[in-house]
Structure formats: C-alpha cells, structure tokens
Amino acid sequence: MSAAFLILDDNDVFASTLARSLARSGFRAVVAHTGEEALDAARRERFDYVTIDLQLEKDSGLQWVGPLRQALPEARLLVLTGYASIATTVQAIKSGADNYLAKPANVDSILSALSYVAEGEAVDEPVLPVEEASPLSLERLEWEHIQRVLAEHEGNISSTARALNMHRRTLQRKLAKRPVAR
Image 1 (cartoon, rainbow, N blue to C red):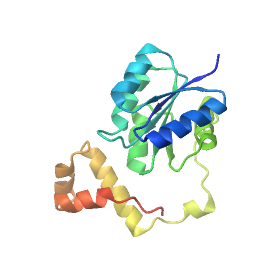
Image 2 (tube, one colour):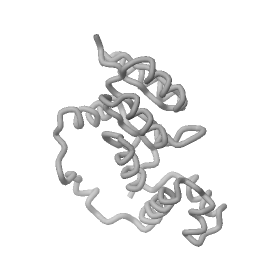
Image 3 (cartoon, rainbow, N blue to C red):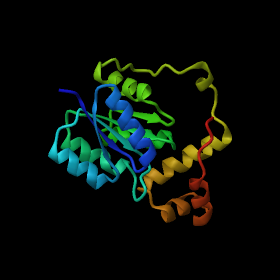
C-alpha cells in the first residue's frame, strides 16, 4: 500500500499540482482546502505525511498544526509558506511540525524536508550556504521583528501595532507585502 499524504492548502492550483506530482511518485494524496476539512480527513484515515500552508484564506495554518499532530501523532508534518520568518518557524516547530519550508517548493524539496526528519539525520547546527550566512538587510530585520511581535500578540493586529508604536493601517500595509529575501 502506498503512503498517504494530506495536503492542507487553499490554493487550488498548487494543491492539485502537488497532489498529481505526489501520485506520480507513488503517494496517495488527499487535498483539504480548510483546516476543518483536513482535521475531518485525519479523523477518518491515517496519513503518513502532512503539508500545511501557513497562510490559508480564512486563518493561519499554524493553528492547525497542533490539532493535526494530535489526530496524526505518527505523521510527519511540514509547514509550507511563501512568508517565511524566524518567528513563524519557531512557532510551527513548537506547535508540533517536524519541518518548515519556504515556497517556492517542488515535490523533491518537500519530500527531502520530510525524509530529513524521517531518517533522523537532524543536526545540532544547520549548515547554511555562504550567501545565507551574510547579515540580513534592514528591511528583512524589520519584517522579522514585526513577525516576532505579531506572534507574541497571537496574531492580533491592533495590539501588535500598539506594541510597535505604529498605526494599525501602517502595520497592515507592511504585513500585506511579501518579505524581502535577504
């Protein structure tokens, strides 16, 4: 029997493309577009692997990591995001995710991130490419700081804006932008 893969992603194109690619690799893939759908699927059947998109249409994928981990304790969970930050990475791992991967991601990188956990090859210190060892830009540092404060305030925009001494609309505009890479 092939390994079962649950995909929680509200982007139809990405989810269906990933499901087809996984099927070609011998996996049985099930797509859920909401956290409730994913949790229902997890209660009905056992999955070996789960990918969770960080930014869903109605809520954060982070809030579904814990419930899915509880429903599927043996599964390997991977959080995927186009908005990677240190704060959300830490929050995802603390919530029960096995790994965290920034988009764009293909099937090979997803399976690699999941097998890295599966084979127990975790290392104490991540090995960074030379280009990633350079200091972050001021824009990226600001974005990381905003993400950390947002996580501390459990995603509440108003209280985060007060903590940052910033107008709420200014914060919303900053959060709507994609983060700079470096």
